[in-house]
Image 1: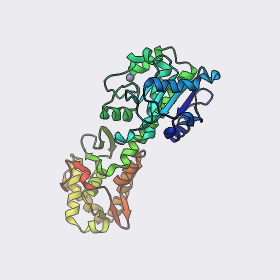
Image 2: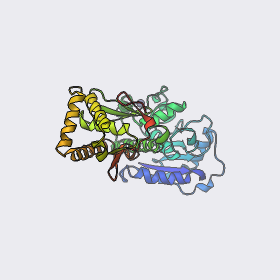
Image 3: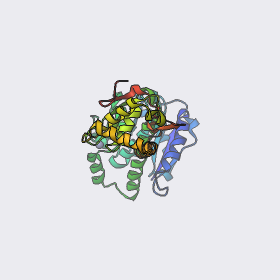
Image 4: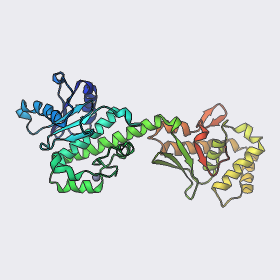
Amino acid sequence: MRIHLISDQESHNISKELILFLNQYFRSDLVKFFIVEDTETIKNIPFTWKEIFQTIRAYTVNRPESQNDYFLYIMSGDNEFSWFAAQDQNDSKLGFVQSSNWELYDGIDAFSGTAYHLLAILFRMVFFGNLNESQHTYHLESKGCLNDLVLVKSQVIHKLRSSYICHACVDKVKSSGRLTTEGLELFNGSLKAISEIRNRLVKVDLGQISNLLDFSLITGEENEMIICLDDDKISITLSRGWKSALYLFLLERNEGLDAKELLADSIGLIRLAQLYAQVKPTQTAQNALAILNEKIQYRVFHDFLDQTVCAIRRSLNESLKNFPELLDQLTIKTEGDLRLIELDRSKISSKHLRAA
Ligand SMILES: [Zn+2]
């Protein structure tokens, strides 16, 4: 399967980027994307769908060797019905994708928006046919599926951030009779590519996290911390015990924790013991304080703190390995004798923590 990307001048750079991105996900002998270089012949950006598909067809007529190939026009500007991408009414080999206006959609960059819709429309062309044949396969309600036909901003953002194909659509592909060796390659490669697009979008959000993060700590049955980002939830589990208690303690202390100072800070020690009893209800704060005092008496308090901090870091690294920006804010940092979490405290809500 060969797919030619034709682009207008404004979309030329994006098309080059798309080729590099897409060809990583497909075995080149089965599915291959090409860029059509002679794009300067396009003088006026077409607006009506008729003009758009005529422009694409003009390329195909001079390429009889490409009669089984797919042609996608990557274009900037608007089109008459404001669709992000569409296939030709009668010819399943022709489609277009809009590369512009993505600044209107929060957190979605032009490359991700274009790449996603390119894969979505190609998927439809290959498995469902031309627009007349495939009209009924669109979801007119938002499901987060590749085949959602939605215009409302929040639903468009939801579709890209979900980046999945629903079971009903997978069943349609299976029964289409088009899952040939090439079809299967396109199917699997597209899934991997849209999952990478999703990862990039989530990372963009996390990069801009300072004003967006709604961070809540829940230490319930499983003693889980849940980080909420819009509709996404990332959970981190620290064991119910000293790890959780010390982490909560550090979250409460904007100024961090100096192990030497804590030895002489009875109020601090009591607070740590209280937090321990909260996350481990089988223990009383009295018992917890006795355990801490024993560690101080036997001079193992520093080791105990260091080991617990290391264990917390390991848990955080494991849970947040795909979210480096978030890990940076949530991990415990060391500055000399000081251990601290640099997170902006206004983002935390937890039933266990004192009001900041
Ligand atoms: Zn679907």
